Image (cartoon, rainbow, N blue to C red; front, top):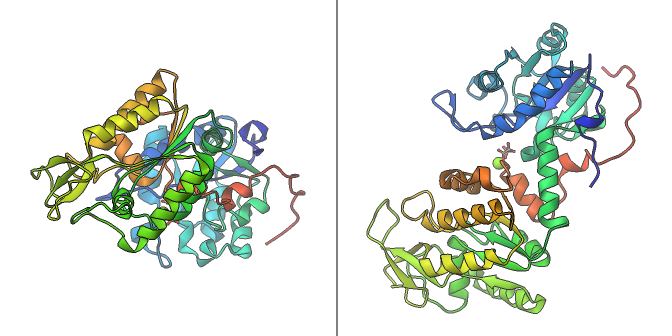
Length: 406
Ligand code: 3PG
Ligand code: MG
């Protein structure tokens, strides 16, 4: 796929509107996870160093109108801290407050605008709202893959109004995703975990056409086990989807694809930290027990599949990873994937909110080829859907110079 990157952009002396994703978890007024900010930092500093006037735009949360609890002000302070440079803040993203703040900037300076979702035009991809944003800049840079699934004004409509470029994080993400499914080294395996099949049907369908092996973990594996007639006790299980699970298994078989399901499980009477648990074969789950993680034989099996895989795509943890010790399966497999990657034997690409949290916890994020900070966008991309924020960056003639469009 072809798109313009910062290598193609002339930013010196220009006002550069940079769409970042500052929708980060906050706790007690502080940013609780800076991963997304850290990804955007290189783009921000590069543009400033090249003499651009940098104007950050982002949404935060899902406010209904203006709401001081959803202000970007504390997040802007965290960005300033991470990049080690001052960042000015404008109390609105359009209109007089934004325009005078932008007018006061020198090349190399950085400004963050208030939450775009304080205006209804953002989520409705409103053209007039996009024009008001676009007035503030000469060039548009999108560095927020994690919002690319939203056809919102600061992501989609604005990119039709200004010369649009992918920032460094967006570029890196698109290149990693290309390596994962569009031009991968084979064989390709996917790990799909998480609680429910119902939220991942499109994902499973699309992956079956792309991968050689599909490794199923998490609560959704229980539905597959139940579909094969196994008792899963009190485990999370979507009984109404057993027929669908059987269809998926049949389709995989007809396509000659390998499906990897757990062969043993860590079970306990309830989900609680350090509750007494045991390992049983998946044929022997007691009616009073819940499956909470994959067992050692399953881990070994998954790792043996990875050892003959060249490209891995991973979305969703294996067990109830947020509760110890049921994070063990995810951590062991993550560790093996990280080692194979470090040895140059595997291209490993992972994404999704839970997945990133699990891999951070396993301490392997830096040793994977690429871990996306995107949740919904990563999932929709894995489903084979086209993402509005990516489509709009695809190579096309630059728009003509703007006339007056207030
Ligand atoms: C995310 O955190 O997934 C993105 O920032 C998009 O946010 P949204 O799901 O509220 O649109
Ligand atoms: Mg989301």
